[in-house]
Length: 100
Image (cartoon, rainbow, N blue to C red; front, side, top):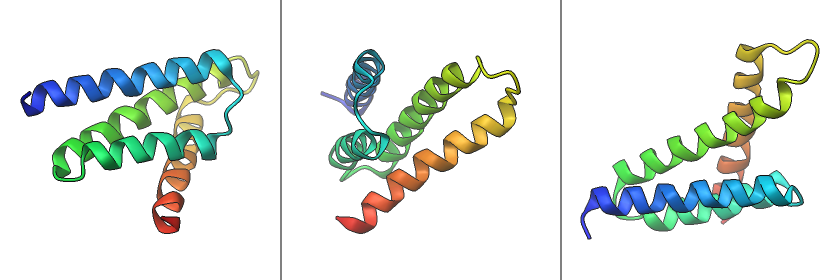
């Protein structure tokens, strides 16, 4: 399988995991992102470009889910919510890196 196929397969898997998490809604973000991080780390261990692309994909999915939840707030600010979601995701993602 070539790199493009691997990337598309990995993205579909990450998307499916996000969808299932959205369905279940009972996994804490720190645990959920640790699972995502583990998959990204394994898939991209020998390919920095793949790692970065998968990280970007997961971050986008996380931000999209965050925004979908936040849009119902009366004082919704898309730019601020996007910033907050990005910071939260990266904090969970990077904190886990230092632990392992």
